Image 1 (cartoon, rainbow, N blue to C red):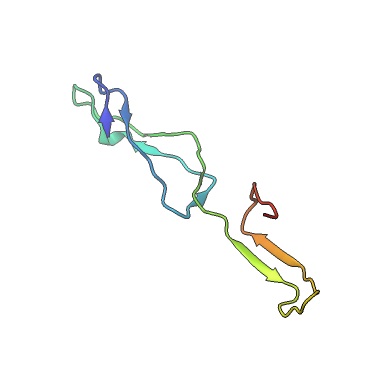
Image 2: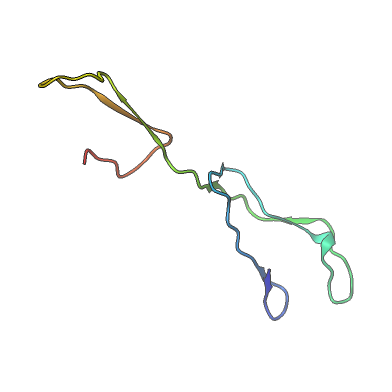
Length: 91
């Protein structure tokens, strides 16, 4: 933690774990663990607004309708993603 000159704003960097996916989160501070300059302890907890985390990466499964083709035949290729994706094209 890094505090400002008045020790009223404390800053930290939060980095979520890989493959985390949660829509409901909050950062909480137990105020009983801090004191003012007079030594008076805080009471209760302070909580952040809700935030979401999604560090999962999309995966894909590829299936062929026919896996043994001969010259001139075609098959349907199905690509199923683990989550909605953007920027996918035939190239």
